[in-house]
Length: 549
Image (cartoon, rainbow, N blue to C red; front, side):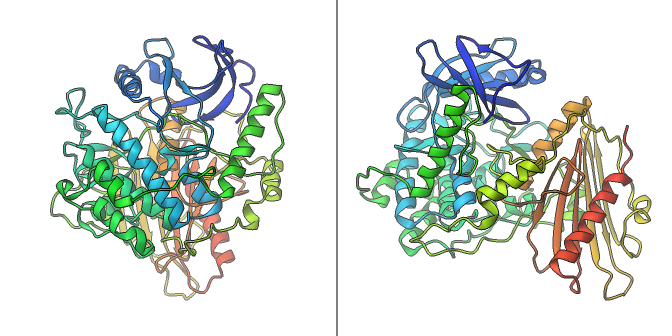
C-alpha cells in the first residue's frame, strides 16, 4: 500500500485516487474515494492489455458477473467502465487480509474457526450460484477475512451456467484451461463444462488448506497436481476428525456426489453468533491495514508494527494459470521429459506438506516475520510483494527490463556452470511462438562431493521487453505460491527457495526480466548453508549462460 507517485492518475472516473493497493502483471488496484467520501477499490487494467480486444471482452464479463452478485458475502460493484481507454471497475472497499496471507503469516486456523469459514463460504457460493454463475477460481487468495465475516472476490473468470452461453468451457483452442491447479475440480482440470458443483470441490480444497496449510493435491509439479486432482485421493491426514467428512464429500470426484450449498449448511451445522469472527492475529493484520490507509489519507506513510497485508478486494488482475489438459488415462511423466512435449512453463516442484499444528491454536509468528526483519529488508532495498499470496525478494530496479533472446543448449551450458558434472543425461527442450523451455539433468563425476544437478530455464518471448517480463513474472508468481523468499542474492529480480526433500538438498528459483531459472542440487555431504551457496552460484551462472540484448 503506497502513494501513487509522480505521473500516476489523480482520478479514475468519478473517484479521486488516494493510493496504490497493489499491482500485478495484468493490472493494478487503486484505493479511491468517491464524491461522498466512501473508500472504493478500483481495479484498473494495464494500458497494453486495454488494446487486446479478447482481454477487454473478458473484463466486460467480469463487470457483468460482479454486478449480478452484490450481497453480504462479496464486494458490491459501485461503478465500472469497461469501454474506457483504460478499463476500470470500482467496488466497495473491503478491509481484510486474504485467507492465504493469514495462513502464510500466522499459521493454520483452529477447527471451530474453519467451520465458521466454511459456513460463510457456503453462503457466498449460494449467492453466486443463485445469480446463475460459477466462480471457477475459488482459492485462498480470493477469500478475504473481513471484520464482520468472509468475502469471496474476483469473478474474473466466472461464467454463466446455462450451457456456458457467454463463453467457452474454459478450454482454449490451444488446449489450456484457466484456473489454479491445486484448487481446481477434476472436471475443470480436464476442460469439461462446469456446474456449481465445481465450486463446491474448490471449497473443499480451500478448507483443507485453511486447517493444514496446504492443498490436498499438492503435487511436485503442475502436471502432477492436475493428475492428482483428476485421479488421486486427497490427502486429508491433517484434517481434524470433526471436519473430515464434510471435506471428503466436497472432494468427491463425481460432481453429482457432492453436496449442494444448501446441503453443506446442514452438514456444517449451526454456527453461533460472535462479535469477533476470527482469531486475534487477523484483527492485528486489519489494524495494520487501517494504519496504512490512515497514512495515505493523511499524506504520509503510516508506521505499523504488524505484518504487511495483502491487497483488499479486488486483488490486482493476474492471469489465472493456464495449464495443459492431461490426456485421459495417462500417468504423469517425469517432469523433465514431459517438458519436451508440452508448451507449458517447465514445472517447478512445490514445497512438501506443511507440518500440522494443534487445531486449537494459531502458530505464532517466528522471528523471521517480525517487524525488525521487515525493517531490515526494507533497509536493504527489498520489499515484500503483497496481494499475490507469496513473499518474494525484489531488488529495487530503476532500469528497463532485461531482455533475454534465447536459451543455451545443455552442451553450451555444461562448461559455464560451477559444478563438476558429466554430460547431461536427460535433456528437454521446447520452443513455441511465446517462448522456450529447457531442462538439463547432470550427474556428478562419481565424487562424493559432486552433486547431481537439475537446471531449468523458462523464457518468455513474443512481445516487447516489458510485456515479456510481465508474462514471465506471472508464471513465476504462480509457481512461487507458498515458497520461502530468497533475500539479498545480489542478482535477479525475484527469487524463492523450495524446501529440501528426499530428492533435493536445496532448490532455488530466480527470475530476471523475461527469464526464470530453477536449480535443484542433490548433495548429501553439503550442509544446508553450503548447498544454498552452491545453488546461488549455479543460478547466477545459468542466467549468464543465456544470451540477451
